[in-house]
Length: 271
Picture 1 (cartoon, rainbow, N blue to C red):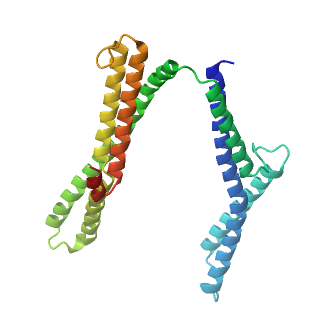
Picture 2: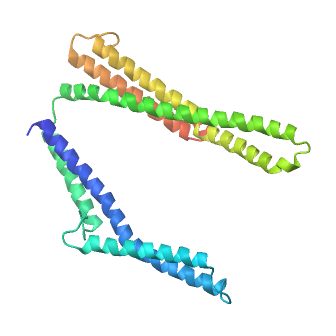
Picture 3: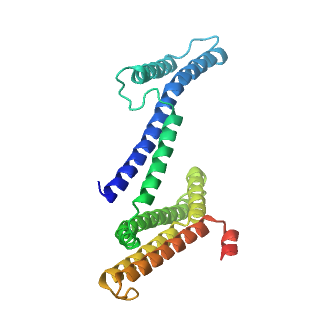
């Protein structure tokens, strides 16, 4: 098995264990949570009967809702118990504590680290592999930038429409008593959108992400074409300068994200 295949196999083992831990947590939650929900449902039913319908009968609609919900919970409990204790079980890790899977994950991570240290390729090969990883990172940044740009545009359009609607409704209803509820809702919408835009700053996030993606794309193209700033005759030197520059861009992007997550006073102190 080649070095690449060995490292990929270890990564697959770690990813598989992480997914198995998630699945097992859901299974354990269902095994213990469903019976508890049944008990809570019966207690709620009895409490409603004792405090609300003590002297009268419970409405048939309420009875049907509780009966259907209890029937669903009982079926789910039986199905989960069969899946957990049957042999063979349809579940991948029946009767396996989550802590055992976590221990297996820790051991797999340790094996991966040791094998990666033993099978680590030369520096130039790692830098070349890093270069091939950058297009995916650029695509991710641009995707996030488009997402925040769309959120910003949606918030702006809602703000425009709500602000204009307030004036229109006020002018249409004079005095505005019949439309008081609409005016309250529109004013609430304007306030919420304005506060959310100022707090989450989707426009600034979209701009920063797009700027970082464009800069990384520019350096990737420069490396492939052999133009400035990566014009060394030695490929090793070009790859080293490329990796250093891209990591600097990513560090700047993380710093800008942290500044956007801070309050305004904190941003001024950082700047």
